[in-house]
Length: 360
Image (cartoon, rainbow, N blue to C red):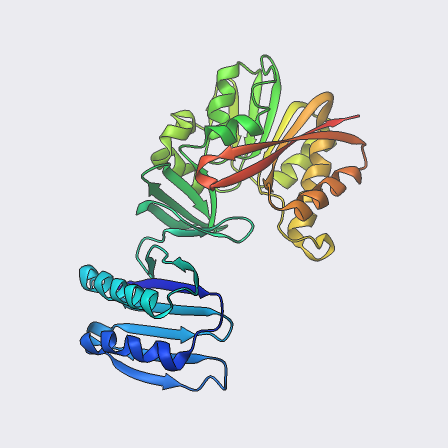
């Protein structure tokens, strides 16, 4: 059973007088047959909880720094009209009691906590976003990660791996950006894709008449899930692991890359769709940075002198992490140059940075 959580905040120009404000609200709570319990704040304003029928709970806080906050929690099946009437009555009464000192009134949309379908996902820089997700299409744990495919009314099915939104059916902009934004000629070229188990990059790349695409992805269960539930992204490309101009290797990409380096095999394009740039800015203490540096180094070694390496960065707001990634590029054994592009990826609900890297 889920919990509905309502909030109502009043910002005031000066600390509210509890003696004149709180008594004016008590009649509203009593009308709802709610019982008051006052808590000791050790001089930091006023705090009371009110409990009522059907498990309703209201937390009233008159802060000492010019804020009055009201939190209402109730069962998801409670009478929404009654709850709206309660909040409307409190808001109207406080407008009268605080007349002239209110600088802002803020009432957020209701939060649904603990629901079977989780609609709240953080952005890369830690802001909470509410999606219009209405059902879980698929969920399974593989040997490597938790796999979810969620349905959004706006973005279609969305692939979520270990709690991170990877790709929605709406996100052609992501695929185009990580392939060079239409500026590259793939005809007759050899392409290596690291990751990309959703099949989106592969489905677009085969349209460009390359000589051969090799995709290396470790998790067969992701491929199977996307083949069934992400067909607006991958089409029928994942129905077979081999085609006229592509092959999908269900393997760890690191040994494969090392083998290609040993064999002297080279590619015109390497597309790294494995992971975003880590949020941590302490690369010495983050194993993800170690993995990223290893993939970078091996990828550049299998890249032809005229080739290009494409990868995602991270949120455009993560300036420190992106700068750290660019510092890693400058430390590679082979000197490289790079450019970056900022793209709006619909299901991410934030701007995303993509990199193009080439040998000097």
